[in-house]
Length: 125
Image (cartoon, rainbow, N blue to C red; front, side, top):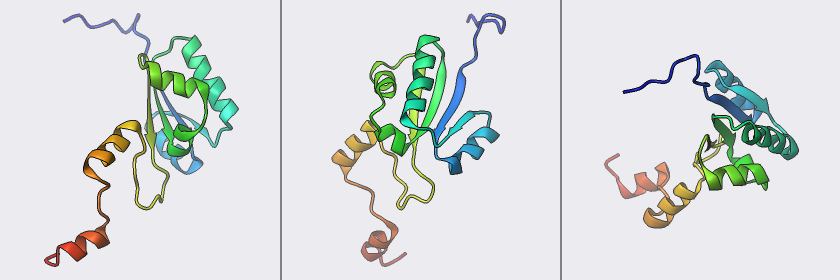
C-alpha cells in the first residue's frame, strides 16, 4: 500500500467556526478557531479554502449551518476536499444534531423521547 510521503502530503486544516464557548475546547485539540464570526467573515474564510483547494475538516455550530452562507452551501453540496460538520450549542436542551441526515432519521423513526417521557412509559426505571 502506497503511503504519501510527509514531504508531498499537505495536512488537512482543522477549523472551528462558531460560538466562543466552544472555541477553547476545539483549540485544545488543535483546531484553528474563529469565534462568533459575522456571516461575511465565514464566507471569506470558506471561499479562501475553496480557492486554495485546501483539504479541511470544518466544524461549525448549528446557527452557522442554518445561515445563508453561499460557500458553506456550495461545500455541503459538492463534498470533496472539505468536510463540514455541525455541533449543537452548549446547553441546548435537548442537545440535537441538525443536519439533513438527522432530519431524515427523525422523519423515519421519530424524535428520541426525553427522559421524562421514558420514565412515564417505563415505571421500572
